[in-house]
Image (cartoon, rainbow, N blue to C red):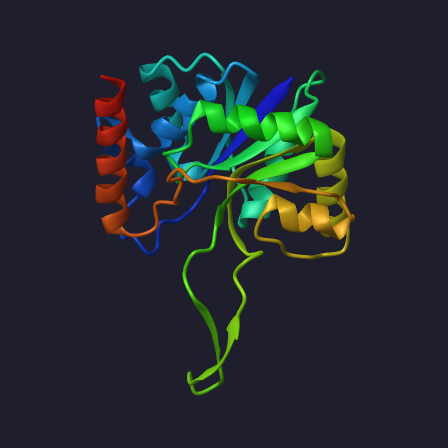
Length: 229
């Protein structure tokens, strides 16, 4: 059984408004993320973790779009890792694998989720990632170029990130007991020497961070709809 924890606890400080509730091709951004997991056959349960002041709106969205797999909507913590840990506390007894996804990535597709799950079954953990295609440079304290970085083995990590339940719970237990901070689940799993397979993803799966990202996401969704027709 695969349970998805969708983290919707960001403050949207760089946007200036709540990006997750912003309309995107007829649905709020967060609804697109939920819909992808709702439509994924292997997903049995969805736990939505959001900010306390927005919980009623997220619950309304789940009802409006008839998301049957959303079992609970709960308040998150001060940090992303706190929100994920609260989501882990809600896992049912039958959950074997856990997917963690940022609600601000509305372009995720069910087929990508399924591919990541299959590799997580083999390796214990897997995640979506995009190959780095830009030239990378190091700079000194004055911002002058001080060298280059080979990009052949570099990837920009995305979500979803999927893990065996026991591995992710062990990893999170370790970082909290040691008082560490991590930015994603891979970083936590690395602390307990877990192996994570990165799934190269050549489809757009970016995070909505700036206002211009909404226009680009809208264009992508329209292109996808046109290709289906």
